[in-house]
Image 1 (tube, rainbow, N blue to C red):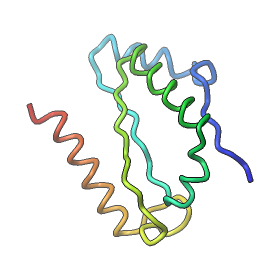
Image 2 (tube, rainbow, N blue to C red):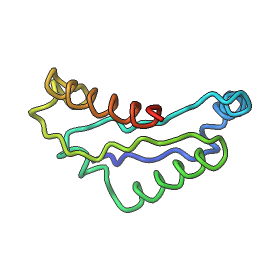
Image 3 (cartoon, one colour):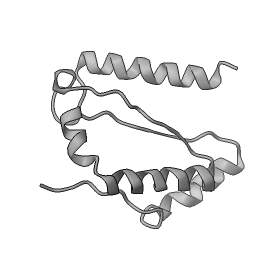
Image 4 (spheres, one colour):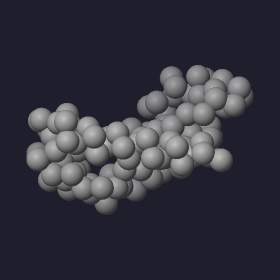
Length: 108
């Protein structure tokens, strides 16, 4: 089994100049969670993965005002066409969630 790893901010440094320009020009940037089947997510979701992911999210929030939209609903294989692509039902659930998140951020 291959465990998923979180890249470090240093590994993603090529994004930093662009993110700084966005920040300087008040352009909002978001990271969003992409759902995976809950059965797969449980394999990836180790203690070190969660910790490193949280550190990466915090780094981009603190350094570039990148806001993270965390998707915390469990979707099983019934909502996916394959390991990484939502089917029509899954797309509807995820799209409604994302819409609600964005409306909530910009409704005021």
